[in-house]
Image (cartoon, rainbow, N blue to C red; front, side):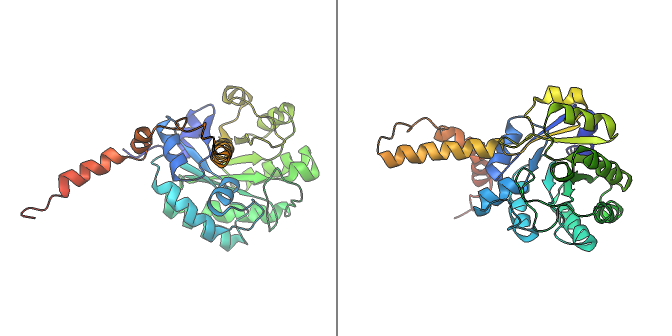
Length: 288
């Protein structure tokens, strides 16, 4: 049976919780933990795959290669970060089709200028709202699958204030966006106001270390948020774990040996039993 799409899940869940995957293993673990979907962002992919900060150094080619590997390892529907589309309306439609053909169920596109950067970093700028509206009209009209869920993200809050961010969100919905994502809100009052004043599916970005407060999914659901991204939670945890393990190895103490996931459990996670079954069932050549 085909899994539900992000569009379908966003209607049913209050909210739909999407942990962020930074590689194929993290996507597998999200699926095995029982989540209904997941998120792939530029911040974690640039860092985990290429060792780069999220400041526009990686674009469609780099992200396509990384996303394909992750999506191939996980059966869940995925929402991906499309940054600013890497160009004009034709580039945005090309990006959309590229991701749709890879099996992407949903994406968000932002109104930053190029080179873009993480929404919680200083130095970002936004394009005129009309330019973003043109991209949204093109993408929503030209999508290959009507189920593909297109979210408009605005970074105007940090630059021009909450009123402008809300005006842009409303304009983007009228231009065809299926949902909105107001980045870098400062407190719960602003978050509640956004969900109350703009009638659409709202995406909450729960980015640890960022400027928006981290709230529990139940609280976000009560506010009216349809999708909750916990995009870099796994990335930050695994980075700290690797730092501690490397420090232990460098010290020569090896105090952490045996504290990780057991070898047998890891091989189960990556599906060794399935591949052994295939090997045993089909690998014996008659008369060989």
